[in-house]
Image 1: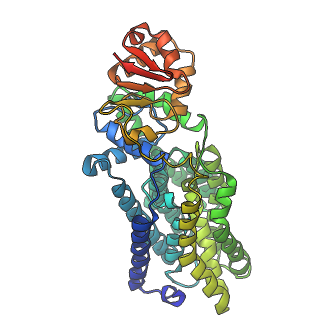
Image 2 (image 1 turned 180 degrees about the vertical axis):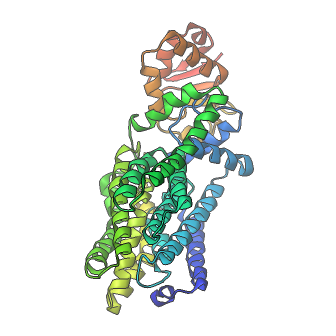
Image 3 (image 1 turned 30 degrees about the vertical axis):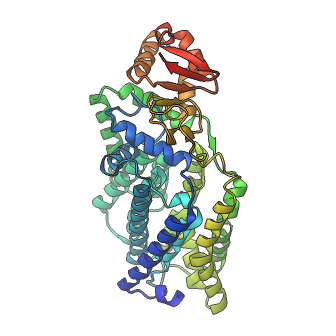
Length: 462
């Protein structure tokens, strides 16, 4: 099986497709894992934007604006289908895998032209089931792959390439628009462009123009939609609000243990032990710099979940490929390849199936009979399980981000705006386990007259 992918033959794509389809069928048919809190929030976001709301102005969440628009399109086309998220996620993974493999061949990152990087990167996406589904992290990482590939092209060219430098910036800006943590691409672009790729002043300015163009278009959109103030106030909170601790470092260590071992071996037996051309040395430096900034991206991320770790996958796939191409003995090659392509997806599947109780804060609780049949609900809590049985109404989707807005001192203008946000979307039931809505009612007497407390932490629209 290893020799099959080692050959540089376009028909090896069939093998990549086979493994992707095989694991997709097994996961979707037999895994039976419930939705996560994050997946529910993205589906709700797409549904609410479909009701004509403007993101940030009418709905408080920390998802990137481009991802929010993409989720709206998914809801508009497929409705609230979790299967659509699974299928589209795997389509994006296939695009990343093939594009990354083609870039490594085109820019001669390795001495051998092979499809090993494709099957390695595909296997790495199976480290955790949530990496396989559509998410802002996956949308953003797609454009990071595009940008890294363009950076590799700069190591091969002996003259300025305006198109490549502009594309590097545009891809980085789009990644940031899809997922805020990719804002780290901006300093990465400046440092790597100047120190490794040897950007001239003209190239640097051109790449920066490319980076800021998508973001400025987002600003213009919110300006014309009368939501710029809300965008500029809420979007920065994506880096400062309280963190959702879905996964511990111990959990991430278990999931990434085997790939990291192979990557460590690849560094010593594939990278250090082999000579490299000047272009290949520059490409290594680009990836290792990206590892540093990827670590910074994880640090500023407000969601500590396995799916956020996909920012490291380009580097890990590079190191593991170096291991497979650098080690000549058959036994370690076969063991490593079998473990990565077969045992890793099975082990990940088994881990999540056996440890669902340990990750109870990440998964939605099992659906029960609706507590308020047919009524719209606003949940002021990080657990979104109630939305499985009730439609959402109200402006507060992300609890921690909403809590910061509710607890801040407000000017009269902000109080008026907050009142309009709530009054525009009056939920029939408010589930308020932390007392946030109760405190809000005491500040807005008009709202207080519209709601009554049915029982502790539950308010009903009169």
